[in-house]
Length: 636
Image 1: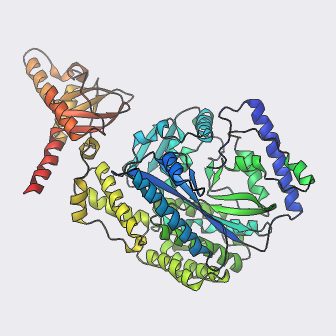
Image 2: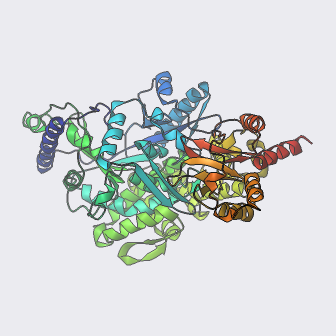
């Protein structure tokens, strides 16, 4: 997430001072470009890998700070949430064994993290979105205690002026509001850096934009959030909505979210991107910078452009321009942020090799990609692939519309192989990593397609979304432990489902989430019909704002019909006159033993499952009977 040392409360005066330094940085950058000061005739690559930390039940585990302390490895750094960590990999000159050296280092770091997590009874998962993340994991208790993150949360909230409202529709539909920035922590990615010269920056940046859609299609690995099957790469929609500072009352104005693909091709210089981002996006935060970059430049010192880099770190282009200095020589990089984490380390490195091969291959083959494709087509491709990955068409060069998988097989893999060969990447590495991409597309699969298929397979056995998510992640964890690439993964077996289910005995794994509810002012007749039509014996009663205000049982309806049989018209009685206005509730993380005791002690047949005031489901005698019937059957 960038620079850590920021002021949590930035005064208007401090913001204005920061803006002054930001504008000086832009001026300095302009001068540096005019003087052609940037490193050239060499290309380097680098990467950043993000991880999920989970407990033995595959739920998010806030172990980040503990693990950073125990590992004491400068390659690791914290992320927004305590259940995430990031590994920063060493840069390498893009030639010979650069990609395999990157994999070797990442494998070593991964194994170190796994070892230290195990000491804290934790596990490590590599995936774009963790299917077992729960709404209650997204509280500020899980925010990493760093000034930057608190400042980001406060500033985004102030600029929005309202809660975050998320809506994503895929196979299922997810709609909810949230009061903090931790929604963004549902995402983990694998970010790839590619150094280019200032003269070739526009050429390569535009190529990166053009190839982003098919790259994402073969790499998608983020289809499930909060138990819902959404986009194949739900990270795209989630990240955009989680960091959106636009106010809903200004939605008729032409504006952009801070997470975005861009608005046009780059014409000639990286300067265009920085200028556009400063023009479109307000300064979010500031710190006590005092360095005058123009003065440094006049003294022969290469400035770090700290204000520019800090602002750039709060604008999340999927292909982000990056400025850096090494040995007093400035350089430019393109950071591709679109790739999700996982499914395995070797899969991530294969995605990286595919991207780098395409960049180098098309960089050599094409004179100007903007003459072959409209920018609107590149953006449309990106949107469509985010939703359906390989199961969509691509509008490619010269207006050709082609199935995405066919494009990858027919054109992109050969270009990537040529690009890697042009960089003198070892042939064995080209065959290894491109072979993984070839096998994936031949099987028409990626992480998202595999996850959705296996989630459905589990869900069809009668397990609810919660337990289906847990079983899925447990199987993913087992497959990742083999270190075999995705295309060799088997689907979940019946034996795995039977074995794994017995490890989970909390309410949320057994409760019904397919619930019907009524309002207090609804007619008793309506409630009776809903119960009859859907074969349920208890209905939660909610207010217009969704707050649980009572529970209505079938027995209460029978009682009221009996009392009104000879004395009045039952059909006009509202639910609120009959319901239990002080229902016994239970939390989703409570054990089944607690549920049984509450039902027995209070002589009730159902418990609303409530978390932070929100109705999550219903725990009824029927779910308990089904659960323990299965257990008894397994003992025979």
